[in-house]
Length: 173
Image (tube, rainbow, N blue to C red; front, side, top):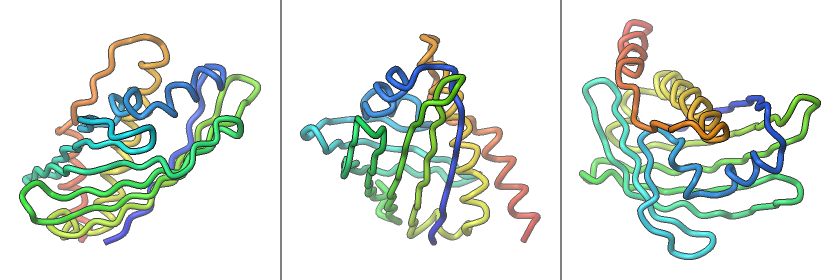
């Protein structure tokens, strides 16, 4: 099951500040709901884990993120990730393109992720995965804004809103 997630958001911060945090996997992982970097292999490869909860299903993926391209002058990046369900019931692959541009008020950030999920989570279908992913991205943006402002970031999953999406998705079927 493949899902494409896009997100564009504006920040009232200079591009240098935004890009410094956005291009630092250890720093940015703290903004991703349920994600943790567990090990840095080298300058371009990291190990980590992501815990997701979709209604009654809770799954943890152990995986790796690779920085394929990081153009600090153009403020563009390409990341690839792979993960295996810790219970052996699935896997996930992700490709993410991200960029940042200066605007009159600050910085615009644009992301496009293509996620391919096999196994337990795939049974929910792309519509539900897209709905929940959109909520995860909104939570990421809120966390990133907090990070830039120096406020405390909470990257725990907001399970109540995820359950709402699951129920809503089930009734749409």
